[in-house]
Length: 125
Image (tube, rainbow, N blue to C red):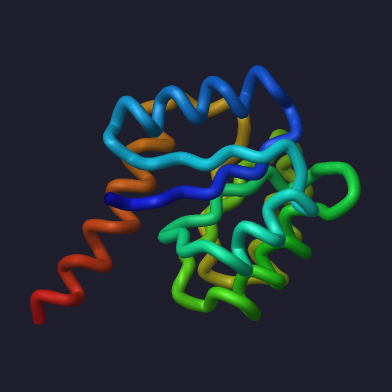
């Protein structure tokens, strides 16, 4: 089963995303800030870090950099409500997927499915 670590400071959004991903058969561990995600990334395996970019204490970009350092095999996907922030992420982390709020849950699930379908296709070669 694919494990997702979700870092989202907005409670309603965190619960909404968790339910949608769990309904699509993903295992989700949700935290309310980047600093809460760090020890989990260091002690557990996650296939995907799904993180809001703008959060208190530690933003999603800093969290993603830490994730790449301690768990380079973990994929990273960003969610944000700030289009300007999305542009700067594209420059600082090329190739990272950024979903801009508001988005439909089906779009999120499709992006996650696409990400892992690509990986499993690569293993078939």
